[in-house]
Length: 432
Image 1 (cartoon, one colour):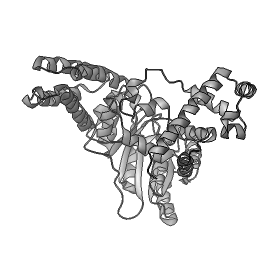
Image 2 (image 1 turned 180 degrees about the horizontal axis):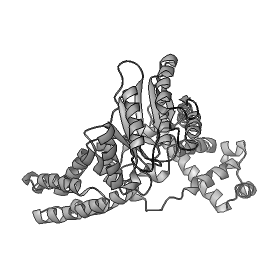
Image 3 (image 1 turned 90 degrees about the vertical axis):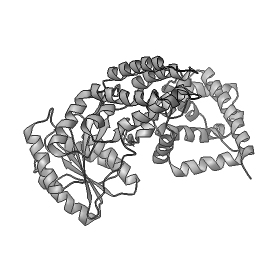
């Protein structure tokens, strides 16, 4: 997310960080480079101009130029203004005071509405809500079946209606089902088109009039850049959006849509899709997102992701094993699988302050964990619990069984031994 934009801004702002003294000409030159980076990232030119005017006004103040660390002050100003560009604070949803809350998802075909509906349902269910998915896309082939399949994956019920039934009738029936079954949130997956047209908007208008939704969220593809901003303007004019969900932020999106939508349309980005799995939907926090763009990390986001996807029982068992000093290769495999649930390692490192810059691009082989898993699974249970019994013949058998060279088996065992030493040291530091 924001990789290309973040790397370029980091290079420009790095010049400020390295200087002990900063003059007005230096600031103006640096901000010209920031302008170029933002425009290359497809940020709206008016939004870019207004952003830089605010940054320059604050950066040219005497308090900044004469401060002990003027470079860091300018980086902070850029961070604060980026956060302001993205929103006023952490995104929230509007909840109904009586009856089920209705969230209407709208957008063009191919933006990822159906998948996003399932992701949102899983997230809200994890927060203690009782969502019901509603299949109102009666036109796209297999759209209803896709939603039903995804609903089964996330463990949330879906109301689908009859084949070819009017979407408004399906949605109204879903409201009654929700009231009867105690479902507190309706997430309505609507039909899309290849472009905005009158029949689609008329149908969405009827859905809005009947359901009176608390939220009308546009699902937009971040990879379309400024086109996503134009689409947001069209839907907002017709329906009055309450917010936006940007999908495919893990792709090669340059970031222009995310940084432009609020400035142009005036609607907050409430969620971002950061991957293909049903867990890959993040609530937007402008301050934390700005930190990630500027390579400052997002520790809070990392903790939230861990809490959302990790198995609490497995975590408790691992903790007990560590406290007892009995951390085995079996535990090592469990821990590794728990980390894998959180997403690609490169993505996780970007959320740790300073970690992303310390690891060279392409320095992490995503296949490595699979190789480690294959090696451990080729061991017997006794070997996993007591790796000291692994002599040369056993190591050769494990290498053959996992399809990896003996050198990799030896390297894993060496790394595990070092991990065990570290665990013992940590155990000694813990209060009794």
